[in-house]
Length: 390
Image 1 (cartoon, one colour):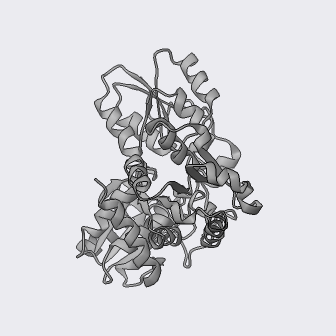
Image 2 (cartoon, rainbow, N blue to C red; image 1 turned 135 degrees about the vertical axis):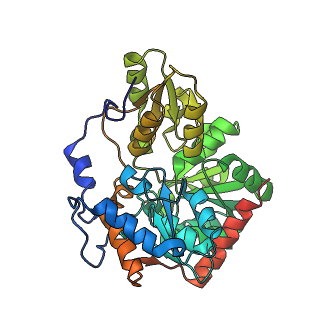
Image 3 (cartoon, rainbow, N blue to C red; image 1 turned 90 degrees about the vertical axis):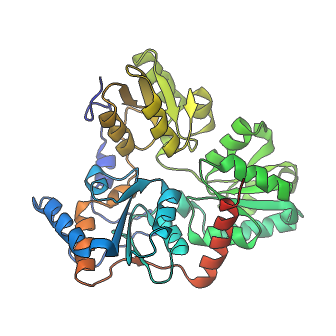
């Protein structure tokens, strides 16, 4: 059976570089953290993390996203996807510090949902999200102007994926829309079409397209892609008026790299394999897969799978490796031959976590994530609409 270090992937120099501690120039949040980080070669890092966490006791609550490194997950009080973790933070009102081992938009959501006395901390401010950064508040406001000029804004309902900034969630709440996760995207779209005739889905075009076509029976012709870098989104008024789904031109840099060729190749080299992919993958990949679902769905599918079954999983490599270790009775391989970590998620490493915990233990709050009240109120409105979905 496949072991943790035998996932048939080849690390590229670029991918390994992205796992380092250099600033990420492509990230909107690409800034260095203040202070000196412990050396990653420090043999006492694990002991230091444990000691600092013990000193903080119930004052700190550590959240670990499924895509985090194992060295970080070891110290998480709860693991999960972005929304589950934000909910868990809100369910711990007595925890003074919420250390969110994830990326920036996740920490923002936790700050929105927690009380004013709690402080949300992101161990590395450069841990952004390329997908979230593909839709800025200014670009979305300009898009809404385009829809207004086309005469369709009043029948268009914005639906924002959880993987978006607080500004985008606030825009969604202000304009009568809701937030969705990869687990409840269909329910969110069903609700949106009860409110209006069209949906502006942002920022991930693939989740929007896959949900509309695969789950709701729409055609690809019902969907158009709005490109914020082109005049009028690169669309004519007629195209906008004819569309039911106006998809933002955004994608996940991890899931977007899987291709139809990846699926065909894994079926050749692993006969009888079950291909399981995330709905952020391209439409042709989703169509060719055997199973499609959210991160939580992927985890549960492996738990329920019979011994001896074979699985090729199209999602972030840290999670795939962890699933391979947890299920030695099954053959688990990575869908693509090339290493595919989430580079910004991987910025949260053990040195950053140790620095964060030790700083908090000394009474020094570092890298606090705060969302201003107006943005928070409108974003919370959109989140509450999601929570009220049947």
